[in-house]
Amino acid sequence: MKSIGININTTKDKDGKIIKHVKNIISKYIDETNIFMFKDSIGLENIKHNDLDIIIALGGDGTILRTSRNLNNYNIPILGVNIGNLGFLSSVELLEFEKAMKRFIEDDYYVEDRMILNCTLPGRTRHEEYTALNDIVVSKGTLARVVKYELYIDNKFYIDFTGDGLIIATPTGSTAYSLSAGGPIIYPNLDVIAVTPICPLSLSMRTIVLDCKSEIAINIKCEHESIFLTLDGQRAIKLNNYEKILVSVSNKKCRLVKFNDYNYFEILRKKIISRTTDCEGDKNEDCTSCENN
Image (cartoon, rainbow, N blue to C red; front, side, top):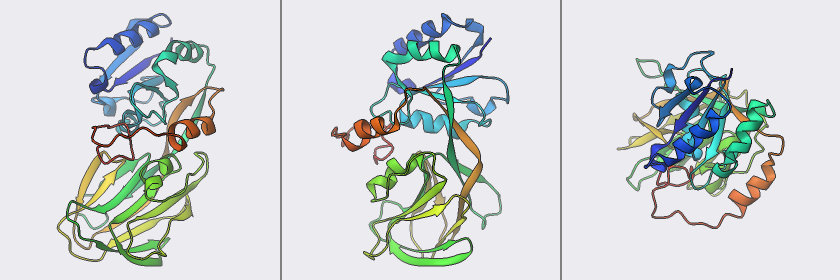
C-alpha cells in the first residue's frame, strides 16, 4: 500500500475546497490512514527515510521549492500540482490530478533527478549548510549602492567586478531570476551551473556556464549596509562585510515526478517564452523571478 504526503500552500486554498477535492481523489486509491497532511511545509523536516512513497506539492513553483528545501530525505519524489499562477515546475494542473493519481498508482510515471546547490559561509563560527533547487543569489539590499565582488572558480581567480550581485543557478533555476538577468535557458538534465551578474558596471561581464564539479567562491570586497544571501528567493541570510561565500553542487537531488507525455519544450514555450501575463503589483509567491516573492 502506497503512502502519500500532501503539502498544501494554504494561501491558495483559503476555504479548504481544493485540499478536500484532492483527498477525495486519493482516497479512491489508498486508505485515508496512508494520507499525511502538511500545511505550508511545516513538519516536512521530520519526514524519515521510508515514511512516504511520494509527496504532492499543492501550490505553484514556490511550493515545490519550499517542499524540496524542507525535506531532509531527498529520496522522496515530489509531484507538483499547480494551483498557482505559473506552475512551470509542476507536472500537472489541478484538473488533470485524478488522471495523474491513477497513473501514479499504476506505476505509470518516472522520476527526474534535479540538481541542488549547496552553500556555506566558511568565515563563521557556527557551520551551516544551505541548499537551493533554483538559485543562490548574493546581492545588495534596499540601498541603491553597488557592491564590489571577487569571483574564484576552483580556487583560481576569475574576475572582480562592481554591481548589484551574482546569481548562481541550476538548470532548473535557469528559467527564473537568472533568465530575467540575461542568463541562458539550460536544459534540466545538463550537469552545469550558470553564474550571472546582476547589473554589473562593466558591459563585458556576462554569464559563465560551468561544469557541475566546479566550486565557486564569492568574496565581498567592500563595506555595505546590507548584503544578503538568498536561497530560491525565499530565505535570506544577512552577510557581513568582506565575507566569503562558497557554492558547489550538492550530492543530494530533488526528485520530481513526471509522466511519459511530459514535454519540456512545450511547457517552456507556453509558460516562459510565450507568457504575456504581468504579475507586477500582485503578491505572487509562485513566480520565482518576481521580486514580490
